[in-house]
Image: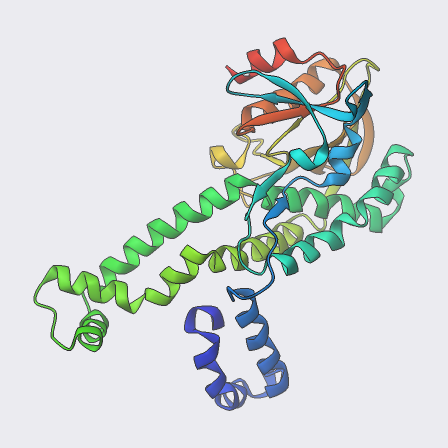
Length: 338
């Protein structure tokens, strides 16, 4: 709300807001700090990082294998042309300017989760994670992080904003605020529907600018991360490994996938939001996949189940999938994609 109203303008009302909130107020100092935080979160002058990994490098490194003379690499399969390349983790799993505003702070937030992942994976592979609430929380939050930090989230955010903005502009264009905004800008009364529409755009100009700069997505993606963490905070963590030592999981470029059991649908691109999902799953190594939602357990799964999870990774992926070199996925990827 502070961001939408403009932090600079809100500052002059700190005392009035404090008085209005009464015993519920955190105090003027805390309110001022909140305004500072809101202002920084959408400031174009905040420190940013262009190269932003949307797949944790800790996870990517688990899919590495030594292939002479290339060294430690993983296999990348392009889903359009079918081309297979050997790449290093820094060359994949990233989106430039995914969070274009205040991204240094956002990356630091993600880093707090990722810094605990190595220990949680070690415990999961050693069958001790289920008895440790800290490791279980880390596994939940890592899956939540990858669900939020993916290109589908950005696309849906932009689509939702466009729809909501159009509806709001239509409503505003029918009322006095549009006429006042137009007259304030041009010094004359709007002559007809086009003028009122322009007045509505002027009235909502700050929010439109915040969206175009990426400020609204910066706020939205952090709120969504916290929401997903809360949604699954008390849910179980199922740790799955292939029963067949020759089978492995692969990793799509949108690796955390929602599933709605009632319909059998999966993935944010198919409309399965976190509120509609019964579970979210993600491979964390070629031989370990976690499912958030079912009762906590560790079990081996059949070849058919491994294939089912891999098929969903391929179907939900946008541009490419990754796997450990040496695993033969070529024919399966083509079949799952079609």
